[in-house]
Image (cartoon, rainbow, N blue to C red; front, side):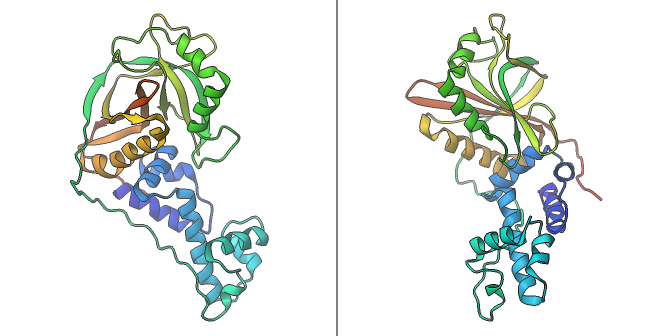
Length: 302
């Protein structure tokens, strides 16, 4: 929570300047993508949308408290032109920047978010902690922007949809071979891996993957080494497959907002696995998060 607050201090201090994703990640003590994930799961809003709302909230205050020109205000808050700024301003506030200067006009204000731990105990969380030896995964890798922008497919979910549509999923399942000994026999052949290696600032790696075994055919695929690691594993209940994104989001949210802040562990980078099971009708999901015991470290930045 301290790291999240320090990172938010940095965001707020740079609403009218250049915000470095790399610096943000260093303050938060995690990868860029993992900070974006934690922020959205803890607040139910993306960091990009939060920044947009805060900029336009401050812009409204500037309009009512000064004679600043709209073109200068657009530049101050990082918009390419007065037109794009005016469009965004009206979409949020319901009035144009010029109309916002009218006495008595109603505007929207989005206050700064604050982070605090809330332990409710309303519902138990099933989890287990396992230490596994190093293993390999292989499959289709994509490098995605942390804010969800970029060329199609620009999210891991779209990568899955694309590979289902073009037959790539079935090919990977066929080439996966037998499951290695450390993987349960009732699980599927195809899974997901996230943030397992360092990429350019503002991006993250995601792979639709299989666990490599002695019978796997890896030619033409990206192969990645996963080091020996301690994992905290959260299993789901059985669910209908059209709910998989909601189930995944719900587990992530509880991990970041409930389990991680109150445990004796911290995440290792942002590495996680989506391990799937089930059949054609009902799905099953385990989320594996790489963790380590906290060694009385202290977060902070200058």
